[in-house]
Image (cartoon, helix red, strand yellow):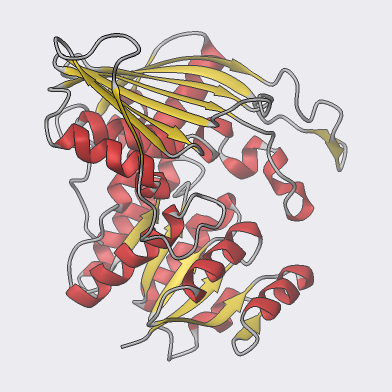
Length: 376
C-alpha cells in the first residue's frame, strides 16, 4: 500500500516534509499547493512527477489523495483545516495548531464533528520534538520510572534568530501567534507529556531585545520576541521551566532537556545526541551514565535530527493500523494554550491561570493527563 500525500504550503517546512516523505518506502507526494511561484518551483524540483496548484482547494479536489500535510503559514491553519477536515483526508497539521486558543478550540470541535462522518480518519499534530532521538530516549526513561515521579522539567533552547520566510510573514506575532506559541509550543507539549498532567498556571518574562529591531515591512516594525523565561505549574505540584534565547547561536548544544524526580535525573542534549542519567545514592556529580543515542533507524535527518521522519512513520502507522494518532488535536490545543498564557503573562506582568483561557470554552483545567481527548 502506498500513502499518497498532498502538501498544502511548500515553503521551508513543506519542503522539509517532502524530503522526509521521499525517504519513506510506501509513501509518495503526488500533489502540492502554494500561492507563491518560488515555492511551487522549489517543490517541483523535489517531486517532479507531482502536480502543483496555487489553491489548496484544487489540491483537495484530487480524489487520489490519501493524506494531507498542512504546512501553510500559522495564521492560515484554521481556515485551511476547515476545508481539509470536511474532505475526510487523513491530515498531519504542522505546529502550532493555530495562532489563538479560540481557533485551536474550533479545530478540536470541527475534528470531533467531522469524525462522525469519517470515523477512520487520522488527524495528527506535528509536534515532532517528541521524536528527536535523544529526547525520545529520555522520555522512555522517564516513562519507565527511572527518575520516579517527575517533579521538575527544564528545557533550554539557545539558538539562532528566526529564519527568513516568504514575505517575512514570521516577523509578526499576529501571523505566528507570537514566539512562545510559534516556536515554543513544541516544548510545552514535551512538558505536558513528561509530567503527564494538564498545566494550571503560567508565569513568564520576555521581550524583543536584539533580533529584527531594524526590520520594517509595509510600515510596521517587527514585533517578534527573541528571549524569555517561562515557568509552568501543574496540579500535582510539578513545575517546568523554559529558557529561550534566539541570539545565542554561539553555543555547543542548541537544546538541553532535563527531568528530575525523587529517584534521579535524566537529560537529553541536541544536536550532540547525548543522553545522561543518574540515580540518587548511586551516582554523584560528574559521575553519571552517558551514551550517544542510536540514530541508525533514521533514514532522513533533515532539519530536525530525524524527528520529522519518525513523525511520518507514526502517522502512516496510525493510518494503516486504524489506531489513534500519537499526537492529537487536544495535545495541540494545550501546547498553544501554554504559549498564549505566557504571552499574556508578559503583557500584563502577572501569573495567568489556564482556566482564564480555556474555561470560557468549557474545558476542564488540571485534571486530565496529556494525550487524552479527541483522537481525530
